[in-house]
Length: 164
Image (cartoon, rainbow, N blue to C red; front, side, top):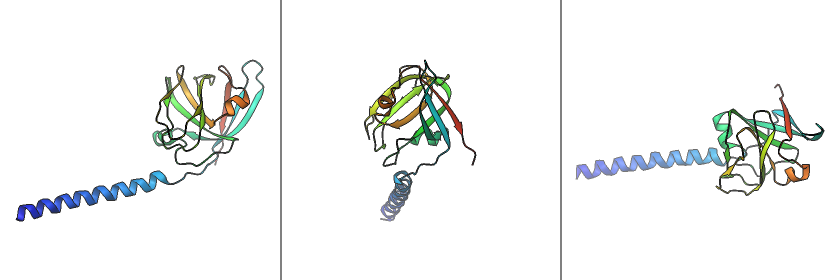
């Protein structure tokens, strides 16, 4: 009888610990994140060097920022974007898990030239969206904007960070 009581107590403690951790993590993951301007980005045509658009951007540079991206947000204004900056130029794979609005995902090489665009990525979709060539930067903007701006492979970006 004593063994059954101890076993039941241990199982109860483990379940309580697991459920507390699960609730705590869920609160952190579902909290909506607001936009914080960290820099400015300009998209330019490759042939003419003419400016297509200027955006306010957030940077995703740490592991946490790159894994989270624009998740847990309801929307984003058309004059904003998120720039992912990676250490290496290599094939990249993005998906839309926990992203609640459609995006254009723009892949850029180490020269900051567009190598491919995944247009109109579906919200909350786990489908992998790979770059067509190695990329070092990825820019996420609202779906449809890459067509509106006439972006194509070879177009370039320039960006700067703002000091706080």
